[in-house]
Length: 346
Image (cartoon, rainbow, N blue to C red; front, side, top):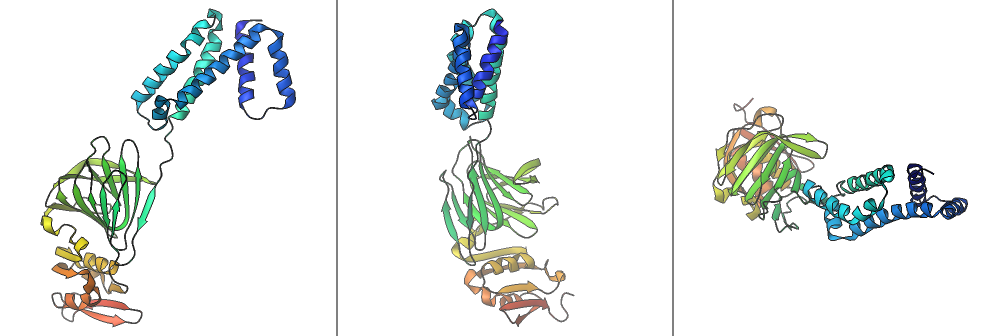
């Protein structure tokens, strides 16, 4: 019998035995085939040896690294290790056994490729209630302060640390790790840092980033399902700088912000400098059990420069009415409607 045909038969028998769906009759047939010739048994043992080498590799430190990384360098090292372990097997095959060796090598490569598939990444979700401010310590030592009525997802990999701010506001004190950049996605904005302190606020139609320490790169992002990718050049922010990005639009101009005012909400103070009334109202609704609503869209862009305590939200509309051309109407269901003052905004 030609060696090529013999190796093909050995391969088919071995594949069948590993399938987990083998009948007693098939096992008897395999034993009969093995007993027909020493060459049959030898060919079958060669496939067994390759399989065992793969098992040993999987249990090794390099195998563990392979399962937790998609880095090409690791693939090369593991493949070299496997080649060294299986070299004697391939060398022992006769020249006419090339086809069988090729099949075995293909099996090895296929298994390695399968093992390189990214492992499922555990995502953690954190949510805060109305008026709740929560401090979090991430697995890398980074600290996150999550503002009221906010939500974020966290997942880490060997090559990156990822946050998705679903709603609300968060302040990040990121531990330095140059090998694993720290990414924060907020709508169609994507923040990248290595280690720094910064604040991200996600509103209904815009994201604002303010920096307390270090350097922060803010990208426009293309959102693809649960993932997002940076596009274009980043806006580079240093301490005391802030930028806003309206959804689906270009970045606003970079503005100055007092470092001491970055994330003052952590101490129960909301500080605004030329903020929109819509932003102030949205923040108030995260710290109040009631609901404050703007009665007309013409009010949303009114500028507000003021400071409030988070425990003053129940009387915030009346406080705003002292500095803006508005009036607050209290309605049933703990709802407050803000309307233009007569002779003010239309």
